[in-house]
Amino acid sequence: MGNQVQLKAGAAQFRPRAAVGLRHGKGEIVYDHAVPFRYLQEALLALDPVTLPAVAATLEKFATRAIITKAENALLNASGLSRKMPADWDELDPLARYKAVGIDLVENT
Image (cartoon, rainbow, N blue to C red; front, side, top):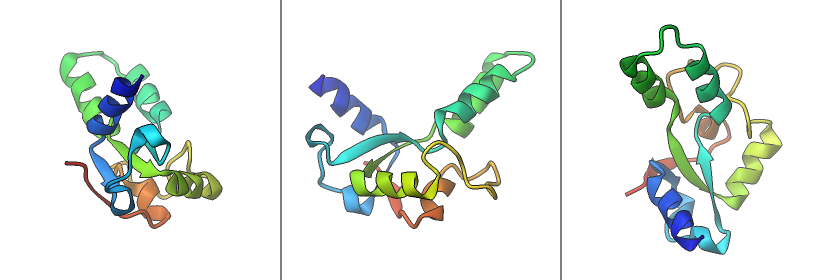
């Protein structure tokens, strides 16, 4: 299980400044889909026709991943944004949920 946790943390494209140096295996950070997974699922199911370029474009648009601290995850939950995007989401910025609650993300290198 430890390797799976490390892979997820390494696969995340973004992390908050507050999570630099924290470890996933210690329960300090949470792996999160920046755009909740259901948006990706709905977009893939709506493709017509299903083509490789259409699937690739959909994944590019909706498959951004981040790691956030447990406190930041609680903030998303408290704001009602744990499983949805903000009401004014432009469908362009995958980090809109985090920005809506003041989570500052950087690239996860």
